[in-house]
Length: 208
Image (cartoon, rainbow, N blue to C red; front, top):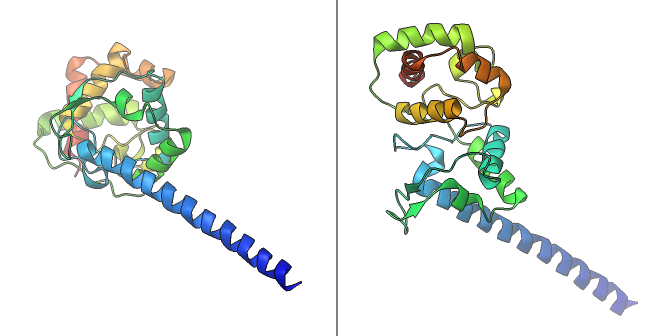
């Protein structure tokens, strides 16, 4: 009887220890993946590079959707270089970053960055264009990008406070079809000419 009780205790201890170990391994893996992201997107996703988007504070759903699009190559993966870390200066792209990430990895990374603060870029902008951009936003974009594009829970990204050079790139990718776009957004974006796009990115980039 004593032996059976001891065996039961040992068995339970092993199960619990295994659970703690699994959690430790999972946490370590997330830390590693987040560290790779930070080498370009900055600490907690607060990018200081004008061609690299700020991702800290985006919704988990939005981040998962985009990471999956990179993994399936439904979204274009332009080449770039690591901006910091041990691989600083070496070439990479988002398809390379996500290719070995499992669905669980993608979810964990998205959850991590969704819990961070969105730190808006401090940058120069054209106030005249920004005013025109606000009018375009209110007319065409506000329905989905509410409150001037500042709400993460819209699950469509937050253009407000994003880097202007990156916003230009994103708009070009939407226009060219290199980046997946919702039908209703395409209809709206087709109404905007090059000058209008420049006004929009200045408006979003003006928001602090």
